[in-house]
Length: 82
Image (cartoon, rainbow, N blue to C red; front, side):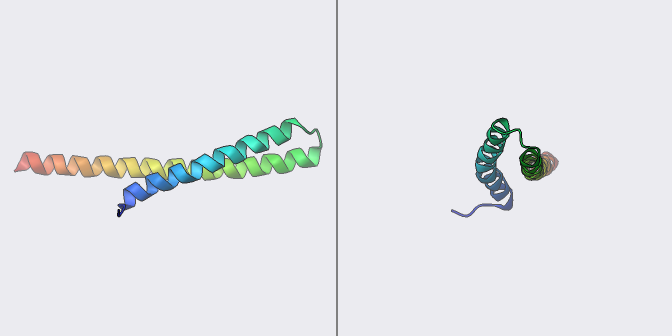
């Protein structure tokens, strides 16, 4: 089965977000088990970068959804003009 570009973006978002959520949860749990300032700093840095990946995926998905809506609008306008 061939995926369109828009479908691929949706699939990638889902496939990356699942393990990313597990990584962020593990970072959070590790942070609750230690008071070492250096460790806390590294965990915070790792979580910030994971959050950045999540935001990029969210933005890509919003672009994906907007393109899909624009495509549907164009088709609806073309159908009504015919």
